[in-house]
Length: 318
Image (cartoon, rainbow, N blue to C red; front, side, top):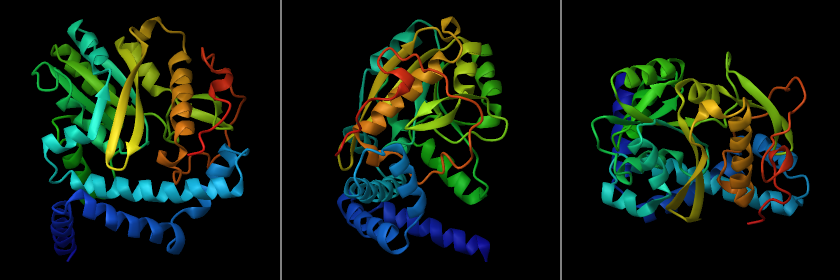
């Protein structure tokens, strides 16, 4: 019975993916309204996260961000399903990469690249970076992303399939270092995406700093791995200029991770991520229980060249 149910679900998702995006967005409108106002999916968590992160905003402004968040969230769902059938040409028109030459330059110099990314916009569409880089289809270059395996095997296999849609490789979090070392031994340069804005899991190394008005334990394993492998490091800054269209700006953090002071890259990432979120708060994953557990210790100064403690003065009210 379980196999039959999953077979039916798979057929339904494939059928759904055949629909044009404009029709999928109409379905997203309905789903977003239901999630926000009827099902109230994690509504308490979303509201608490927003009000604590932006205490200067009015109740009306917070509610407006909440409504936009749920529409962006259901847009993410239908857009991810669309990966089952969307063409390379169509996805390349809908997501634009600015500064991809920065990554290409590091690869040309023989250096692998660590990419800080986040749960903003549609991060699953970010795997289409291979369509924009001149090294996207080169035998001795591997585009990778780190992931946490899902408990449900069927959904885990589905997500792996979607994430490999444009030729990138998914690396399980626990074995990422081993895989990257193996690539290096084989003479393969790598470009690896790290979703470093999650709540740290058991065993994760962390760096405590002030983030969105909260003392926050930020995952520092990305920085430690980049330092160990002496990777160049960039931040992928997500924009959503209009529905169904994204822009990712590659922002350099360092050319050589081993030369940066400990904690510096994590603090820079947190600072840049806050700027992304404050520019358009509704595109971040506010339903994630980021601050569920208290954080021991005191935040350290992020030492950002732009903002003390890693935050800007005013969030975007859009």
